[in-house]
Image (cartoon, rainbow, N blue to C red):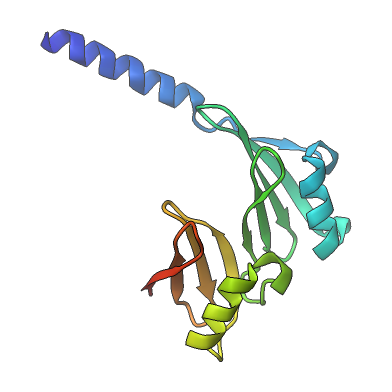
Length: 146
């Protein structure tokens, strides 16, 4: 029985290892249309350093767009925004839900969002003061991380 579990473990590790790091560089035109539209709404195509596709183990693809100033956009397979990281600049208001902006303005009036995206259990906003504010899937503030 012990040998069976070891064999299953070895096979599982092999499968996960074979599926890991299958990222590949693609052209901007290969991004889903919704993702292309969103990127071009906020950035010039000339600023794009690369576009990467990351096939997920259990189906679906993730996409990452990296710009020459370090900014990043991450998208789901259908082109919906998963994460945006503006490094040290404010993320455009339209990319952060209004209810989140209101909660952050009330709690941290001097701060602005530099990163917004999905978290393991909901959403996360990183502020320019280095605080991470966690939100539920229903966009209710649920905690801080520093």
